[in-house]
Length: 374
Image 1 (cartoon, one colour):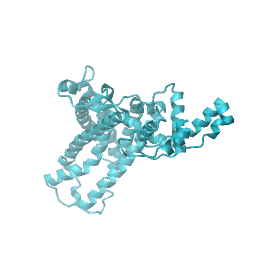
Image 2 (image 1 turned 180 degrees about the horizontal axis):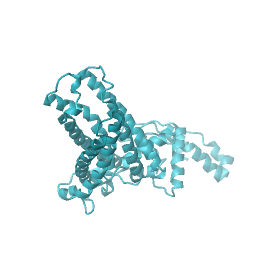
Image 3 (image 1 turned 120 degrees about the horizontal axis):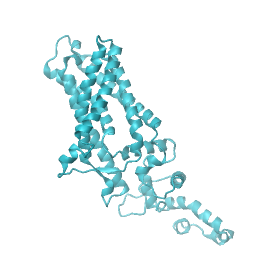
Image 4 (image 1 turned 90 degrees about the vertical axis):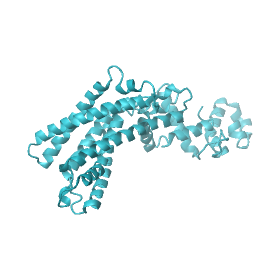
């Protein structure tokens, strides 16, 4: 009554008529007008002292639609607690088919963008004659392999992400070496073995595809050698970096003063730090590999042999795109806290279906300020 009639200065005459004699109708009447009255009577404000005014303007009908969906979702899951990291689990995001399609599409888009940028850089440095055809078979093969890798990782990991709790980045000065080498059953040797097997499989698949497409003589031997080298490098790097990721991470639930927004920001920081660190490491490794192996640089484009420094520079530039993909793949594979990734997938999916706003956290915060979400 206070929100619908007093705050809006509306005429309370209907309450004294027949409506006031029927409790069920009266309750429905007030609840139907509660959301529009709360939004219209309290316009947005950026003043930090205004604790009960929203930060953004919301359409009352859309707000009603979003809140009704949340109410149905929580009721269907038998709870009244709304935790942002459980949203993906509640809407069934963790299906392998969804993960595979999402991973494959993500990898293909990133591969197309990075591949085009790399070819543009090649044209600017060496000339645009034949710039698009440079290493085209390898590029096409890598696109399929990257898409397959991302699809498989998403398919196997997406269910785990939807059940993970948020974390935050915390550098531990004491006990760092122990956590860096890992707990019992998850030490460096175990992580190296897992990473080595993954790298071996990916390397063999990539080598087979490249050898078949290009028609290399002894392509089977090339595939096996490339697979062994990739397995060794991937095992060493992923073993160390997964330990580093564990060392950097801590569960946000350990922080007594955490809020929904702070836990979201903390988990986002964990994932971004992990992505940047792994991307840079893989970028340097693959760039050095490209720069130190003359067969991987387009020396024929200049008509003479490149020097060590130009070859190394070109290797670092051309390999950076693929390194970012490897870094992204590794960042999604290692560590324990990927709640933010699952949350992004869930909110974008629900926003596409127009069930919830894309910036869900801002909407929930304003709903709480308005008293619509307790």
